[in-house]
Structures are given as structure tokens and as C-alpha cells.
Image (tube, rainbow, N blue to C red; front, top):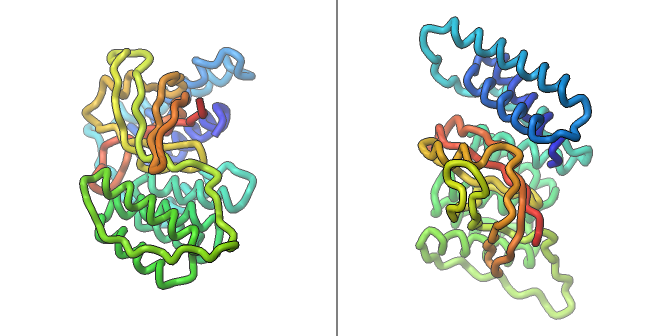
Length: 298
């Protein structure tokens, strides 16, 4: 996602939250958009955009001041889930947009619906390896390791994934389980016959990152974070809600020049940029934040 697309996404989030009376989330989305706009002096119509966003923030603050107390977070309706899928999918390619929509549902805490969408994509044969890995990630993060293992075993008796793809999912799941300190007997996949076409991964799976904080209250500190979601070279990591200093140090638009990315097959150095963050609305990590980072290979 480009910087311009990130700004567009944040503004749409702010509008959607405001319409649903989620005023604190709306204000946060607009503020993140404002930070990103102010950090880019080359952005077209920059001053006008700043005025527009400041106006939107003012309206939200006026509504907040009228409330005696902050309202509880409502559950997202089926209609709103569909809106999220549609509004946060920017790719012109229909298949990629479908994945972006499913990822957005997961980030908003709608994990059951996200899993349903990933299963639909897998059944249709749309980017099956990516869909399968996201299913495994969702199950490990928001269900249980046993559920992820059971899902892999089920796939070994079906034809939704090829043998090379199943092998890659097995390696991926095994590495995630080991990172949690778990060992599991995962049924091996029969090795493809000689001459059978192998399917190579275009994108390296990133399971965790280590980076040096470039600015803010925790400047110079080195931290390690597990990757919750990945779409191409864009990853999402969880930041606990009580890590205020860390959140302040990793604002939208922050350039990260010293990142080590770890994968099941090794590690590599890279750089990146903070695209934005989303507060998790449901599930065991409710209240925490998903920080989106675009990784550039070093």
C-alpha cells in the first residue's frame, strides 16, 4: 500500500467509525491521516487536506464533548462487515482486493468472518497458498494451536492444495508452533515425483521482526515483535494497548531503517515504513493495536 493509499484508507476508516458513533476510533483514524499528510511536504493539495482533516477532527471532538461518558464498543453488524471488506480493498485486481477485504475483517476483530472469507478463496483456488497460511495464522492467534493442526491434517486428505503447497504450509505451521514452544507431529506430505512441477513462493513468510526504534520516547531501543498477518511485503504486528511509549515512537509515516526479518528458512535485513495502526475490537487481544509495516528488502 502506497502512502497515498494509506491516507485514503485512514480517512475512510474515520468516516466509517463516525457513522457508527465510534467517536474515539474515528478521531484516532483522522489523527493518523493528519500525521501522515503533515510528514509529506510533496503531497498534492497538502494544505487543503490538512484543513479538511482538522475540520473533521473538530466535529468528532464536538460530538465527544456532548457525551457524558464514552460508550461501549458495539459489535460490528453483518452490513458493516461487508462495508469494511469493500472500503478497505484498494487493489484493482479482484482477487487481491478480496484478500485485502478479508485481512481488514481480521484486523477489525471479525475473525470468524475473516476465516470464512479465506476458506471461500481457498475453495475457489484463488491464491490458495496465501489463503491457507492466513487461515493457519488466524487459528493460531485467535483460536488454538490444536485447531490449526487439525485444519492442516484435514487438508492433507483433500485436494484444495497441491503437494508442494501442503509442504510449504507444513513448514510454516511447524515454525509458528516452535516459536510458541510447542512440538507437534505433523503428518508429512508425500514428496512430489521427480519431474513434477514445484511451486515456488514469490514472497518470503516473515514470522517475526527485530528492529531499532528510530525516534520518540524509546529511540535507540531494540524490540522483537511477532507477525500476525502478512500480505505480500506488508506485515501487521501486535502492540499492547499499555505500550504507550512504543505507540508514540512508531507513528504513521515513521521510516524504519534497521529491521531484521525472520522466516522459517532464515533471516534477512531490510527497512520499511509504518503505514498505520488499527485497534483490535474483539477477541483475546481486544484493545491492543495492529501496526501495519511495509517491508523493503535490504
